[in-house]
Amino acid sequence: MKQFLWFNAIAFVMVFVSRLIIVPFDHTNISIANYIWLPMGAAILAPLLFGFKSFPGVVSGYFLATFITKGFVWESVHIYSYMGKFIDSLAPIVSILMMRVFHLSDFFDSGKANYAHIMFLVILASLIATFAKVFVYPMQGKLIPDPVLFIQSYAASDIFGGIVFIYIALKIFEPILIKEKLI
Image (tube, rainbow, N blue to C red; front, side, top):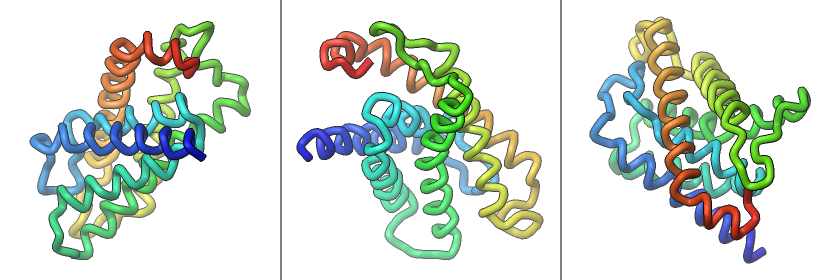
């Protein structure tokens, strides 16, 4: 139980802080993503390091950051933000499971990150999250007027943010992760 709480606390902090760092890049138009969505990297790294039991920490980090960044006013557009963050939390887990089915999930070899597999995971999770949002967010309406721009923007932002976050986090914390036998 202690390990579960500890892992979820770390996952929460990773997602929450990475989301607050990129607030200056937010758009008022929900159909255009941030330039670099760092929380996708945090949402992917948490289950890679701590397993799927880190999901509550990831989703609660997303939800609290969304609550803070969107303000305390509840409007209908906020429902889509929360649904999108739930999708962003779940997409890495779905992607890891898909990669395990095809035996592509060897993300760490003897304390070394297998960046080719991690990069594929980032791309897969980003595409799953983006296309899932296409079915959740209203399209061809006033919320998302241009679905093609939406898909391009969100996929690129998730991929770039995921790669940047994971690479930097693994380089900085590699000695600790090896010592704790997390990689």
